[in-house]
Image (cartoon, rainbow, N blue to C red):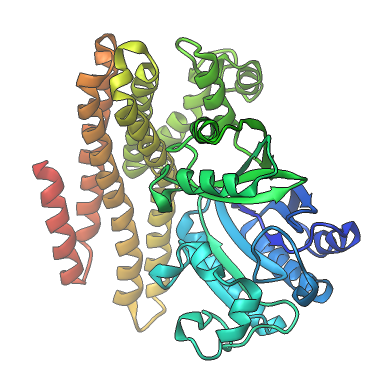
Length: 491
């Protein structure tokens, strides 16, 4: 299965194009593609967006850090944006065929290699953090290069996750992590008074009681006060909500929002959501967008034969005389469809006058169902792969002294996949039930269908769990799983 990972390294250079060119050049390699590069002279920082295969993009990131260490001297670096390293932060984001857990493993590998090759200490953040207080980047970067340099050797809280307690003399330290897609979004005010921007940022960011999934700071950029924000979950805190709050806070200080900018890339879904909000389009659906409809048609999803063309290949694979895909994959597909139907019902009620009082509940349901749908779609392939791994283990066991251990390891994974499907599907069903009283009653049949699909998915997934448990030698693991199955069955 192919893998696609995004990496968005931030380097402390936004004024010298030749240096940025050299850093980008160092990251060019087969299987890695440059999507975007942004340079900001005031921040003295560049943001590079790469996407590529799992193995290749790790090496590209490591090489970029090494080239930045050659070219950037933080002792002579000044800019509005806080920084602690020549390569300041290197996040990995799952796109396709990988999970956030995979990206955590990637971040830790890259962190270890950066220290090994370049003697640059590395801190892990977000999902890759091994210490809770390091999940937030601002906690790690507090004091910036100079502050960390002063007390890294004596303050245990500053001890890096990889490397010795000393900064690289010119390249500082680097932060590497794994996270969901982040939107870097800035709003310019019609004033040079940066204190106003800082007060607005304080009101907007979550750490001071503002919007969930928003981080913010105030800077002076190109002669204007700027409210700089990171939206760490745009589905739960959409970009338009952040913009509206900045506007409202700005009015309190007698200023206004002049313009805004996006640093790096933004998902199309985020802009579709903003368009729906500001235009107040009734019954808005992303399929109303010409390019989306064209993409579906040209991709065969709505070709001759209609929707059948999209589902037919999977149905035919199920019908084929092969062991995979089988019941586990079909259960995951049913669960994903249940999540899709429930999400559709919630989306078609959100924003309508009759359901404005349920805006928060509907938004939360849509965001969570989107996550569950992606996880369940991934489980379609994961179930087939786990079965194939069991068959491979049985073959290997014939030539090994540790036959039971090899087979049990594979069986545990083959058990965990459908168990996870059942647990996720139970959550889908719970959300669907909660949607009944707060959504359009004319869509009751859609929720009924979603719940029926969910019940079938849970029953099928648990049947796959049980058949794997029958062959397991690890009785403690089997007992633990059966307890979970009993709880799910009772619900």
